[in-house]
Amino acid sequence: MRIRNLLSLFTVFLLSLVIAVSCTPSPQTSTSNNSTAIKLGFSAWPGWFPWQVAQEQNLFAANKVNVDLKWFDGYLDSINALRAGQLNANTQTLNDTISSVAAGSDQVIVLVNDNSTGNDKIIVREGINSIADLKGKKVAAEEGTVDHFLLLLGLKKAGLSPADIQFQPLETGAAAAAFVAGQVDAVGVFAPFTTKALSRPGSKELFSSKDFPGAIPDHLVVTRQLINERPQDVQSLVNTWFATLDFIKTNPEKAYEIMAKKAGVSVAEYKAYDAGTKIFSLQENLQAFRPGNNMTSLRYAAGEISKFLVESGLIKQAPNIDKIFDDRFVKACAEQRKS
Image (cartoon, rainbow, N blue to C red):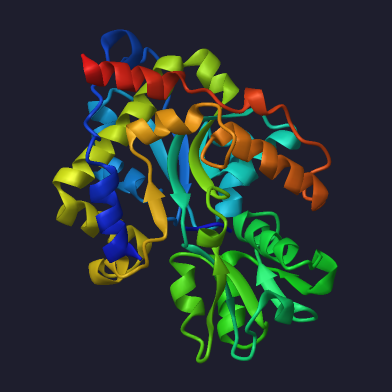
């Protein structure tokens, strides 16, 4: 499972959303003639809780899109649901999207929600002080998802291979519980499960996504069928996201109350997380979709991640990267904003 400090996240929202304004859909792109609800999946990650704000503040309806927002306790369950055709859209990471496409699922990234900048962590027990110290140790993470990916990145950086550790594949919540219970020596988890893992006496962060900038971007991913059949609704989904960010900017207390409740923590606890998630503004979305030669470019990042996933044995063959991204919807939102 993949789930993603939030006094700092509050600051991140305000700083990154300075230019964010509500993108009012144009008549030709926002009004759907299809009353069937879009099934949109999301799970517990700071960059995805804003969808709950969208629902409770009726922002989907305001942007003329019918959405059945589906909560998943397990991130991996949401990925599997999209693959199985039980969802039309989902919130997921770049590496997980690449893995799904490599396995034959026809998925498209239409929006960048955020980048993980520290909220994905490898947490270790007392006595483990370096990545090299993980050799021979029991390390838990949810297999095939983002924190497993982060673990493999760290091992590679230290010159270790997956065979050098005793990997324990556990769902993220179960992995955190196993670590706290002393059943494993280290764990890969994301916020808010990081808080639980760090409650073990003597535990500490060994490394995190901040040590691998750009490696863990999070997205709104839709099926190609949805784009082909209902492009106006995809546009409305994207418009709703930026309208939601604008609402959070202008109504922070209300928004944080909603998000904290969904996260199962107090508002104070929600705001107490480290600044581990960078929410992307509309302008930052436009920049991310452009070609580039470093990890700030989604296409470049996807190429590098694909190579790593193949080398690590997580996928057999890299998919066609060019087919994974469609920036027309963020571009259209930007144009609407100008008018």
